[in-house]
Length: 334
Image 1 (tube, rainbow, N blue to C red):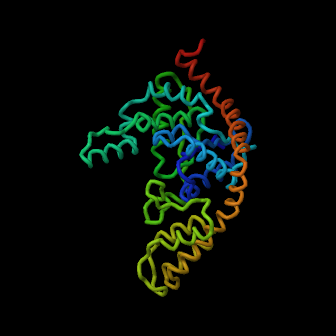
Image 2 (cartoon, rainbow, N blue to C red):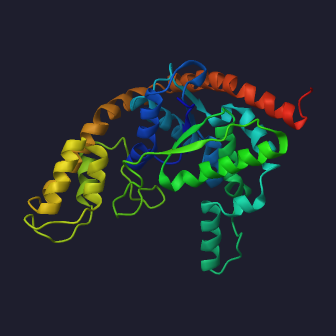
Image 3 (cartoon, rainbow, N blue to C red):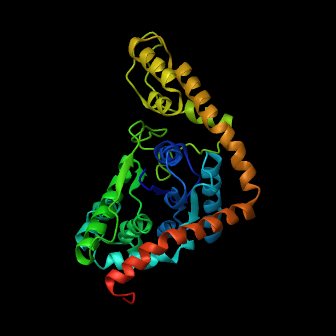
């Protein structure tokens, strides 16, 4: 089993799209992985969160919220390695070293940077207006997160695949300059749920405000599902797959999802019933984890201790890579 690493940025409340697109496939992969030196790595990338300069107290709270979410949904901090990114100074050291062999043109093609430039030009601003170095160099920091632990498997959603591809390019550039030091990673995309739709049918995202928080209580889940826009077809009329069905496929057992899809295509189900089925399936999925999450959040010192212990294990994991990189580049004594 190749070593696995994954992280999710601590900005806002973790939502259903985070779970279906990254958390669940990563946990599934972790359960099939071995322990010991190859233990799966999960990290909370608080350095990445600084690109939007959140208030310090908000960032600290978000780190604990995400930590509790991962554990509540099945991460075992005694078996898996769970840590806060900023507890590993080796990440920043490797980011600088990798940046010295990374082509600027590679970063020019990164989706987030290109989108920011396009938005500036569309509004008559200079191309790089308001774009900080953190946004521009984000892919190199992400590459360092991955390459530091010689991880070969990186679970991502389809929209995040480019970051792993850039990490591959960064590793290959370094290896061409200094020899075969770094492991070239592979993205692992969960084919069951490529892009998770939100309330408006677009990708579920905090930036769109169309997400459903994983900690939402049952009444909030029902209200959110009830707001999904549908057409006016009556129950007896066949229907095209839509946001309701796409989400149901992600949260319901396979047999139940296939049955609802059959009823969509042949007729015999109304949107009100489909929404009720979806709300019930979401509650069955997140209800137990919501209770566990609340218990964990009631003990912030315990969560900080879990992250500190995980950071110790992560630094042990990173030590060999940093030593090899320093030796290869001449930063370490031969």
